[in-house]
Length: 489
Image (cartoon, rainbow, N blue to C red; front, side, top):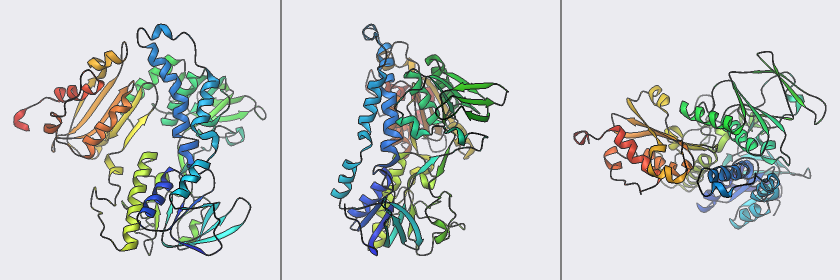
């Protein structure tokens, strides 16, 4: 890896070499531009080492064992318990033992310049990079700078919390030990997934949530995940708040005081109550932006100022978590492809396609975002929930169906439990949103995503015949439940 001399100039500078930044850089390079990719930590970023990949590795073993236990014939063969050390070893393998050399090799092979160090803006299209050895270099962009620095765990202002050295999602996914007692603050995706993972690994898990679980999903999704966690042995407390936290010395027990006056003593505490943008030490004030703020963008991912206008010169972009559009790796990579392509097109004077669903915009961020929560049961959803569709002003019909009634479900597991919901725009006769909850429903989601993004009319969906006997037959059952009136099609 070469270290650029002071004054190095590139067409594009991308700050953050996670999955999102890598995709921006690669698309801009393929578009004919020279690109520098700056990274202060591991190339591959949060998803590769502390989020998507290790969390799913921790979850998978328990899910497989439980799946086998739900099928006669396999159930009788599963006589042992999860091998915790083997799970942790597999997790380490999934993250390449926190070695990013293969990712760095990919960057080089893609023709990108990798610059290791912490980047700070010093002016328009100019950043200063402080290398691990303290060496400082200056990089200048001819056309664009892209911020892809992601987000970090939010630590609420609770007395004693910071001093208690709680876990964030990073510690939860990289821990070398499984605590005997684990408390989790937060009932969102991270909280629910890690509660599932650690309960599977043998921890006594207590999940504390101010409201129901998975609040942005259909209500039944959070309810089914709550019931499953309780069945796993977790203690799920809804409607409680933590008022104080203390730890008994370094590595000692953690005591949580709750707003009902009770106390909870655990070995570790995971805080998963939200995210905050990684923009605090980027030098944003030097370019007229507020440090520690989310970077708002238009659909071409150009950063907007306080007046909702691109910065003068239209040179600054933001992709991934840092723009707060959709805090999901796959959605950030989608934004990255659009941003890399539009940067190259603008730089080379090529025609732009910036209308809805055009090649240079991230239209899907608004009402067509797919997401899987890898709890057990899984929650797979795309588009708008019934409540969100109503709030947006659509005239809708909501269709529910018990997935357990589908023939493919009975083959998949004995006593399969699951639920599906389809939200239909009655005026256009298209699907606005779909939610599946159940075993192995993640693989159903892309069909729903295609239906939502493609705005496929219900009359045409009737001709998309699901194979029998698969869980995908739920699509037919949803349409039958909706009711087919040939005259309306």
